Image 1 (cartoon, rainbow, N blue to C red):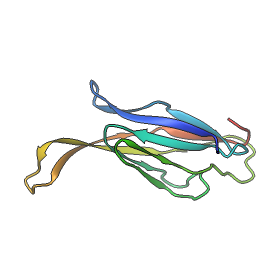
Image 2: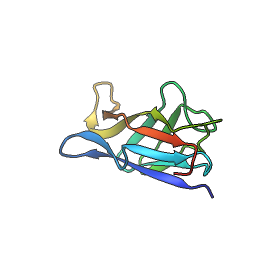
Image 3: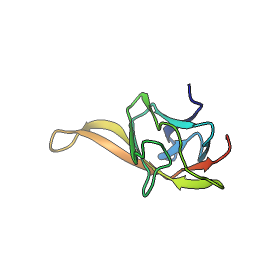
Length: 122
C-alpha cells in the first residue's frame, strides 16, 4: 500500500470560506506518495492548472460529498530539487430551496493550496 497524505476539506461556518487541513502537502517521489482528499460537507473539484505531479497526469479530481478521492502516486522524473504545484479547490454545498428553474440551490466556495513534490521521501 502506498503512503498517503490526507487532506480534509470543509467550509468554515463563521467565515464561509473553504478550509483545508494542510495548506501545503509534502510528497516524496521515491516513496510514491499520494494525496487523498476528503470532503464531508459538499462536493469538491480539485484542479491542477497547467501540469499535474501525479502519474496519471489527471488535472481534475472529483470528491463526492461524504467521500474521498485519491491522486495516485506522485511522479516527477529526474527531480533534482523540490517543486511546488498550486491547485484549486471548488466546493459546492447544497442550500435550502430550489432555483426558479426548479433545480437544487448550491453555494460555491474556493481555495488555492499547494502540493510540494520532493525527490526524497516526505
